[in-house]
Image (cartoon, rainbow, N blue to C red; front, side, top):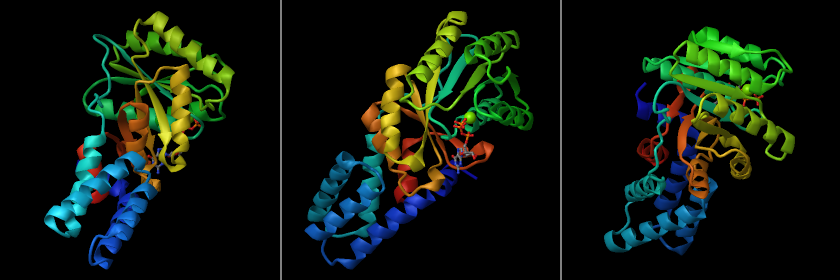
Length: 303
Ligand SMILES: Nc1nc2c(ncn2[C@@H]2O[C@H](COP(=O)(O)OP(=O)(O)OP(=O)(O)O)[C@@H](O)[C@H]2O)c(=O)[nH]1
Ligand SMILES: [Mg+2]
């Protein structure tokens, strides 16, 4: 499947809902009057595109209809262009250490898709011909270590693990040592799920990062917060709080295939000023895709 087809399939729910509603509104009313513009606005907000961007799209649509007359296709083109433009032109690629090992820490609340994302990222990097390793730093949740090891076996990626109850910082220390010894290009660190409101757990995460930073200056080079798209704008609060405790370098939004509110990707990066680096469009190893504003915008609106 090509990249656009992947985006399209993963964003199907959001796309269907948006396009269905917009078509209904546009074909029903003979002129694009105030009431139908209001309905269009509601449809965009319903997909979590956010107030600011929605207002912008509606203004552009109004302007275009006033100058060029009514045209249903026009709406989708305008909306896609505005969505694409709204993404901060920041680097959406995975950061690279200037030389040697790059350490990527994967953080977030419980169940958002951290472990799966760590594994998928390892697969992605390996697919580019680079060597990846995984660190099982969730020593807390039952079966977390086995879960990552299983991914490791499946992907043929080495996993460095400790025992349950071990200090995650100690495991990360061992993992960095092992990854350096094996001349790995990337080490993906799977951390335990934690609520942003649990102070002691946030301190634990700070310690984990501090220990790696002492061992390898600059590490972790990338701190990715994994957000579950199906939790909608709750994710925003999680992101703000995590960012206060451990400076984030980017976002991963997972489970977009399970929501019709995929517009949250747009509003959340706008609110936080952090780049969305990857999006999760399914449960398989190749369902994690590097974010691409153009493909994303077109998958939402184009047929
Ligand atoms: N549909 C779908 N499911 C996903 C995606 N990403 C992860 N999942 C599923 O979400 C569930 C939780 O994923 P995990 O990777 O275990 O989540 P986690 O954040 O590591 O969970 P904890 O370690 O318990 O905090 C699993 O069943 C994954 O298969 C995605 O993009 N789409
Ligand atoms: Mg996990």
